Length: 285
Ligand code: NAP
Image (cartoon, rainbow, N blue to C red; front, top):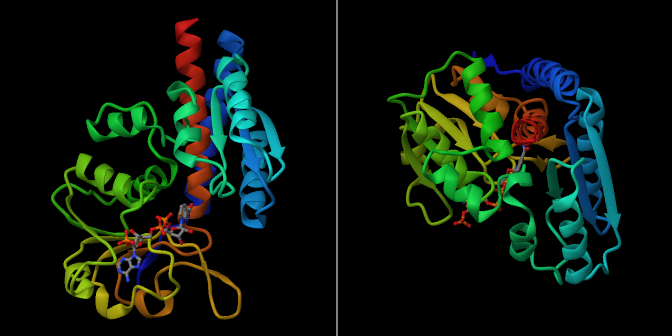
């Protein structure tokens, strides 16, 4: 039976620390960390994420602004808003909720955000800094995964780590963070041959695919640490991860549930990056 890594609990502890550091910053320098969240269109899942981000800001005592723009918003209008927020001293973090409507160029939008306020760490400047191991911000989901691994007292150094998925927001940076901690990292994707043979080598297995019950018990080495990044719906419409939890849990040593695993950590790491940005700004002033 695996030990459950409780993302809600870890997240609550980290948020307490963030709130405390935020209060100190405000008292000592008058700077209150501020986050602006932009959402374009009416995607229901995105609306939930944005609401949760606003709630998290309130919980840790941060200032927040929310921009809910109509689906027909033009690139020029979005650019103008980003330029305004880049100059706004109250705002230390800018987040544009993805995906954007198809007529907008996501890459151009991300590049428009001041890298110093890019708390998602999606800007090429910050991605490059992560690559060389000299970063201010870590992308929120992989950073949350690392916190969960640390919370379980698991050391990555020297371990076989397998990441399934190579997206720019999860898989690739995840691999990089595991590498920074001296894991021996393999990244798998849809063209990987004999996936189960590769994943069975993993001491630490991270799945970021986006398919329910994708990771089955025969893909997991006994005693492995299994981290489930996936957020999917099962046949009954219930939120679930990539891992067939009931089958894999008896095989693993540690496992994250969905919901209540990686999900809560992602927003917490966003708060952490916003705090870091505000602290850097206060130091410079
Ligand atoms: P994505 O961009 O769709 O990437 C999925 C990856 O899975 C791709 O690299 C793809 O390979 C790989 N893949 C697909 N089928 C595969 C197969 N049969 N065998 C091996 N690899 C396969 O998704 P994402 O944005 O990284 O997100 C992944 C999941 O994490 C989704 O469920 C998403 O909702 C969830 N997520 C959760 C959080 C959170 O806070 N918990 C945050 C972000 C994302 P190719 O590159 O070859 O196509």
